[in-house]
Structures are given as structure tokens and as C-alpha cells.
Length: 221
Image (cartoon, rainbow, N blue to C red; front, side, top):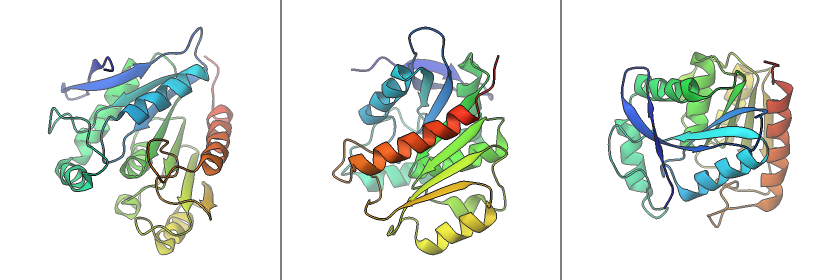
């Protein structure tokens, strides 16, 4: 059982989060934004991987305002989607800003997956972040015409019913300065090592690209 901590959103709401710290002085900080499946063991493991690479990492439980059950089974996608529909945009931004406030580092990046990819785009457009990364983000066009105010990176797959090619092109057009990578042989969810969609080669390549962006946007305290 993972040990979670409580953080305070900017509107005073207390929500659960998983916090993983590096040994020694951190290179920076990363906020991970969940898929529709909540604060899963896979995301906690990912946070630990980033911490091992030298980054303070926090995963806020963005369903916490709606339910105490922050982990949704992968075969219960409809339950996760129902929770997403109940989420309020301003509440999400308040929760993410609360996560930013507990981090001691100045250079904070955000990485989101699936639904969280769209949220990462939203947060990078509204909050003071150093960089943002969206893995196969969904609902992206709903956040236009807003655009990130920091370096941003997209990771898409070539054939994805959740984010079809016309959406990818629309996001490229709206964000000409963003890095956009398309993985031809991978599928939606390729970076989730707990799912059958996991693709090691695509994941490692995407991780290298993500770290390149994060390190390039680092600032000296």
C-alpha cells in the first residue's frame, strides 16, 4: 500500500497526492497528471523513476473532490470517464497549483497521460510552469484557443481513435513552436508499463525527448 500525503489546493480543498523525492539536491520538479484511471500504482512507480533520475515528483489525485476511490481498474474505463465528466476545470487548476506550491524547486514541469495530457496542456496555458508534456492527450481541442506559455511537447500515435490525425494537425497549427512527435508503430497508452499497450521502444524514445525538454528549460536557483 502506497503512503499518500495531503496537499492543499488554492481554494482550501485538501486532496491526496503521491510524493517521491530524489536523494540529494533535486534537479527540478515534475507534476504527473493521471489518466482516467486515477492515482494508479503505475503512476506512483513512474514518479519513483523520475525521483531516481533526480527530480522531485508529485502525482495529485484529481478525482479526490468527487470520490474517495482514487484508483480505477483498467477494465472500468466507463467509471473513469464518468468521473472526468464531473471534474471542474477551475478545481483541477486549483489542485495542480496546490501541488506546485508544495514543491521547493523553482523549475517545475508537468507531464500528463491521456486525459492528463489534455490537462497538462491546460495547466501549461494557465499556470507558471517551466515546461509541459502531453502523452497521447485527449480533449485537447476543448482547450483552444489557449496555448502553453512555456516550452511544450506532444507525443502522439499515428492511428488513435482518441486523438485522430485531424486533431493532431489542429494542435500543430495552433502550437507551431511546440515539439510534436508521432509514433507510427505504437498505440494509445504506449507509455503505461502496466497495460498490454506498453511499447518499450516508443516509451524510451519519448522519455529521452521529454527529459531533453525538461533539462533544456531548467533554471538555476
